[in-house]
Length: 335
Image 1 (tube, rainbow, N blue to C red):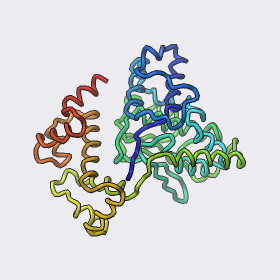
Image 2 (tube, rainbow, N blue to C red):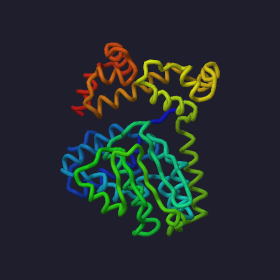
Image 3 (cartoon, one colour):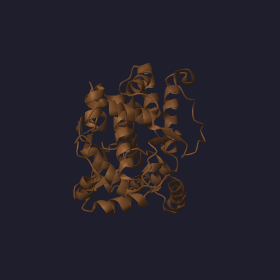
Image 4 (cartoon, helix red, strand yellow):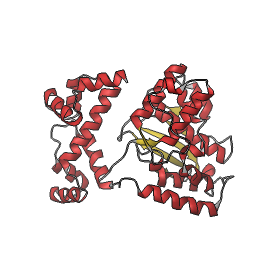
């Protein structure tokens, strides 16, 4: 079944510690977890919620709401481990993006990347259905990727458009100044759109022989990760769209997929799961997100998740997490 670790490698988080060093900040005193070692393994996971917490802590200490923009510009290939070097050794930007698409789970195992192409552009797209890690997480990642592309091609590379799913910040000019293109917020997807001409641009660091060896390393790392299942991912997306409707059941989801209820039950069983397990997984993920990222009351959250009364939601949440929704929300605020 789909097992997204919802994590980044500790090697990527190391960029934040080095950034704070440059600003004279004692990271041992400021941050709640010790600095990752320089030789940390790429698969040494850091949960995405902890990464967000570290970024928020640093942004508050530095009084810098634009930390994502500033930190992202300091990320270099070693922070991305073998994936960074695979991208560097690619022939052109299009091949580099294809490699990033294939190996993204090594660096960002949270939201799957979708690549859309037409005659004029290539779009890198991350939807909101797999969660919203938060503005600082998104802005650091998108800035790092654009900065990486500029380092490998030419410093004047300008995307056609950048979209974020997060709320509009107070200083939108800082984003348009850095990206050099229209930047939109509160969009349904996070998007980096690059022109077809730019995609064909050769990389200064291309090395076909080295690429073959690096791909073998990346393939070995990818093989160690939990397996993905397009079926379970599809079912979860459909559950998420239907949750607020009181008639959510397997028959409705199966019909929307063009299969019978029994067929879907068999398919899920082969993936080691069931429809009820997936409903619970989606409800838990959405509940934690609403409690962490919004001020919605428990009654409203219960309704959005398809519960007829909030007491049933509370019982389910205690079963999932061992704490009540209010306790979970208060813990998140303390963190």
